[in-house]
Image (cartoon, rainbow, N blue to C red; front, side, top):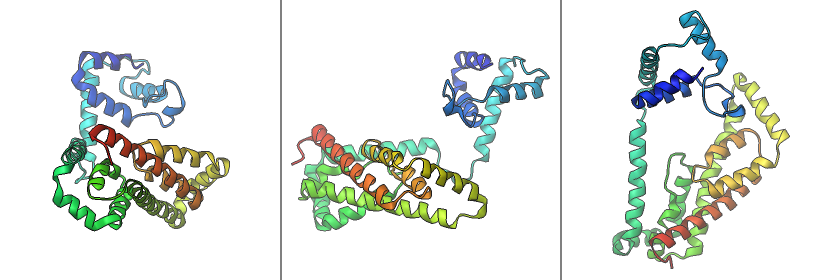
Length: 268
């Protein structure tokens, strides 16, 4: 059933973005539960679309018609996006720019007396504030610990640096927890069914998600809010969630600092 689309992808690589966009837009809701575990349209849906278009559920659409359809549907989805949405290419360039700044700072840290003096003046309270903002952000792609050598050059001590960064990130995660908890408390009756399912999930799995949150915070370089907010909504204990996040943040920041020190030089 998917053969015409695969053949078209092989023959016309320029259509890959449109084909992938269509596959994602029409993906089956439970695609991650069934083999081959790919976000593809269900066979029932495909047969229905073919029958409505050609009068036969097993029809094989011509390649040109497939190309026109996926190109048109991708263009329609692009036009229907909310205005002001930042393009993906711009986001990727921004991330690359931040990574470039991190590399540049670590390479030139010894020549940045003015900046290091300012960091020394701000001290640990300033580092805590920066870490809090970084910990709460769901889009900041470069960990504060990536600038570990900069803070060392500013005269701060290794262990307090990592402790302050971890504490600040955990405080940011706490704000995410409070948002999730508040959302659950003020959600309207329309979300009552979803809230009931979330609470039932919490009752069935009380400890495993907390352990997974610790592993996520320790080893996954993405925002902890992606898990903290849903877990707050599902009524997981603030103490358990924040403890898992804190210890995970300590491990994560320690590994980042060690990695930066090995790549860019001894960290003191």
